[in-house]
Amino acid sequence: MDKNRMSWQEAVQYLIEFNKKHGIHIKGGKPATCVMVAVISKDSFDQEWSLESRSYAFTNHNKFFIPENIGRSIYANSLTGDDIGVRLEQYVPDRWKVEYCYIKEEREE
Image (cartoon, rainbow, N blue to C red; front, side, top):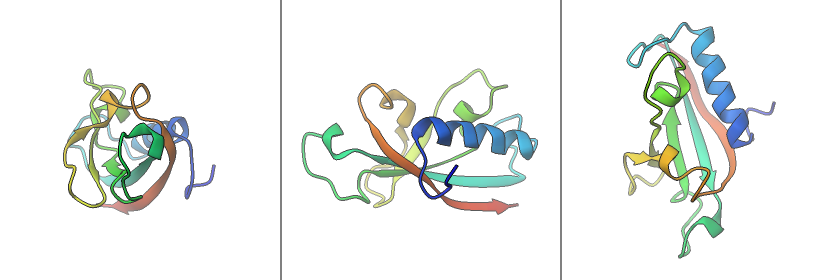
C-alpha cells in the first residue's frame, strides 16, 4: 500500500490497524495520532472547489476507526479551514466520491 495515495477502503483499514498497533481502544486514548486526508472528487459538488477546499483531514481518533466504539462518526476539516467539523461518514460513499487518501502526518504522543 502506498501511504502517499490510497483508496478510501485502504485508508479506513489503515487507521483501524494503526489503532490496534498502538492499543487505542477508546476515543480519547492518544498514544499515537495519524492524520489522514481524503480528497473528494470534483464531480461530487455542484460548483467548482479548489483541491484544498475539497480535501478533508481527519484522525484515527474518530469512533469509526475504533471497532470497540458503538458510534461510527468521522469528524473532518477542510484543509482551507472553511469547512469545519464535517461528518464525513454522512457523505462518503453515498454523496461524495473519494478520489484518493493520503497520510498527512503520523506521530507518537
